[in-house]
Amino acid sequence: MVDSSAQQPTDNNGSTKAWSGRFSEPVSDLVKRYTASVFFDNRMAEQDIRGSLAHARMLARQKIIGAQDLADIERGMAQILEEIRRGELQWNLDDEDVHLNIERRLTALVGDAGKRLHTGRSRNDQVATDIRLWLRDAIDQIVSLIGDFQTNLLNLAEQHTRTAMPGFTHLQVAQPVTFGHHLLAYFEMTVRDAERFADARRRVNRLPLGAAALAGTSYPIDREFVARELGFEAVCENSLDAVSDRDFAIEFTSACALLMTHLSRMSEELILWMSPRFGFIDLADRFCTGSSIMPQKKNPDVPELVRGKTGRINGHLVALLTLMKGQPLAYNKDNQEDKEPLFDAADTVIDTLRIYADMITGIRVKADNMRAALTQGFATATDLADYLVKRGLPFRDAHEAVALAVRAAEARGCDLHELSLDELKGFSALVGDDVFGVLTVEGSLAARNHIGGTAPEQVAAAIVRARSRIAKA
Image (cartoon, rainbow, N blue to C red; front, side):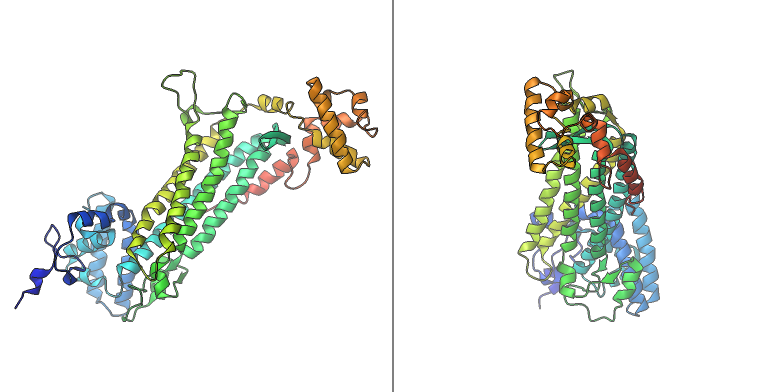
């Protein structure tokens, strides 16, 4: 008779795989390295322990394991957690992933109780739970950091409610705005970002544990108890979907991509504004680098890297969408590839928000240069058209009259307000002595005195409202 135990493949340390009884030869070292995830999914170790403890307490509550088993599991997990936090736990490639590494260490510490922990669950629902726990923590951190960024943005905007600058369309001077008003546009973008993360968190916060491999379990488990233990708002209703769904990861990464897109747009403006051709701002030296050959250079490396890292996040989103698009139900090994893009997306967003919040405090505004730029593009032309309309001229006729005035000013190399009253009357008899009031920058700004407008009073009021809307985790 053949000794079946002799047929079981073993790890390099002599222990059998969790699934090894089915196989007649060991996994090759190359396959081990190719399929293992422990060296990147070990960052979910604390979440794995939290999930396992909740599962163990449920098993004991349901009389599936004994009270002594639970006590042993809790004691062993407490020691493992300390080992992890001290950096003492040795992660073993032969145990494939964070889950088996922790289970193997637990069994070494507490014996059979460690082997009983996996009763009623699979690594499929275990990893889905760990990812959701980890991602929930990451979302809370990101929302808090968005709030820090918003606070510093509003502080800067408050200093510049009356600092005039050109507003641009097509990167051409369009109309006067205030720098504070311009900054508030980015506040609004990040409000939507925070809302997206908070909304995604609701769908993250559903418990897959209890789905087991794909069909549920025959043990009398209590999923609602585990959900309460772990702070989940609900349980996943379908076992097949629970173990195979990665919508929440895609949704999170999409929110990351949009946030990074907003910060990339702001980065592009900071880069342009810092250029001598604009000269609107300067960044603190700690966010810039020099050149190895040109001693005069001060390069805005941080905003440039934000632009570049945005492309990486977009790539992660496409990678996750592509990962899921062809998978049949239920769990497939493909899903191991969800973690690295997800982790990197979160890390990149967290680091970017931290550095951006600090970088905002290091912006020095060159208000005189902003003001001077308003004389270069006929920024108050629309105000002159509005003036004529208010005096009874149809808008299309007013538009044509002002266009002719702009052409004349351009030929003379001056701005509209530098034309004489008689010259302006030549374009429309409706022009009066009060026309120069609307052609000033202050007049243009003051005229936009409504919610969402760039009038300094409105910008100040918007900042007050914004402070009550700052994102909070």
